[in-house]
Length: 202
Image 1 (cartoon, rainbow, N blue to C red):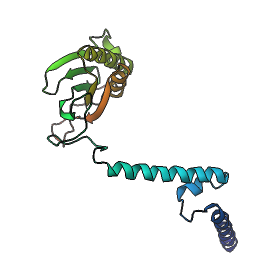
Image 2 (cartoon, helix red, strand yellow; image 1 turned 45 degrees about the horizontal axis):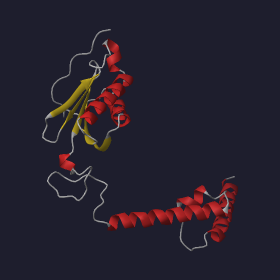
Image 3 (cartoon, one colour; image 1 turned 135 degrees about the vertical axis):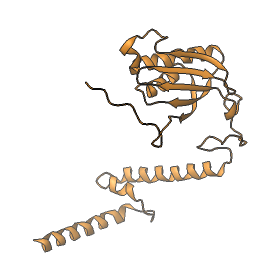
Image 4 (tube, one colour; image 1 turned 120 degrees about the vertical axis):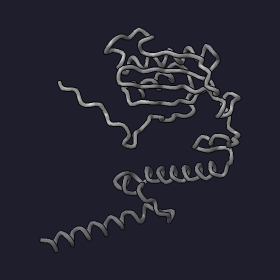
């Protein structure tokens, strides 16, 4: 039984290789594109090959330009990038503190001076409703409106905490009209520091 299965699998493998050879006209190995388009038309295979060539061309052109970088510059590092005429270090910072019971959002300038501040409780949510993602999103929209009234368009975001509103607050900021340049997770993680509180007896 094993010999029959082995012979059958080697026959199928050889047939597939014979099918791939006439499709690969350029002489290059197309890798994963062939496996995904083996049972589709040769036109689709050619489109996949053209897309992979365009992707490699675009990545090489981006690497060749010295002005573009996928990562923000380090503090103190000179960069030619600017957002609204401001360098990365000069952009305002949105601090999001997402606790399990509430979500606080504060917009500061690059020196740390407060420009706008709001929270779920300030927006009118009470008790258990403060800890919902809807409340955090509403708070983000409100904070974005207050920041835009002060002339802020491009911001950096610093997130602290593991509450349910951390992603919804960021979504609310973008819905409010702010352009987010970078997102940094600043959640403090103990390296086995203080002993946690005992679990509640329910």
